[in-house]
Length: 117
Image (tube, rainbow, N blue to C red):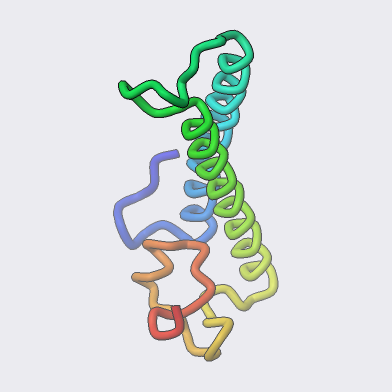
């Protein structure tokens, strides 16, 4: 999704763009994790002692962590949509002040102002 020039996209458009990117990351990382797991079943290499590169266990853990982060990002975007529906989007959940438009443009799912972040 291509957004209009900076400052002209609505919160819904920014959230939709972020959702698309997060969903794409989830798909890619889930596929990569499946490849790593499948590949580890097909090899008997002792990668734990291979000085040439990272281990399969490390790659699996790193990819799983990135996948979990992408899923959390998607959950945060869902929460932002609920805030829009409730009419409280852009209000800091900690202090109750408005979250700056610049912060919301950079982080559409932000729930705290910069001072409370």
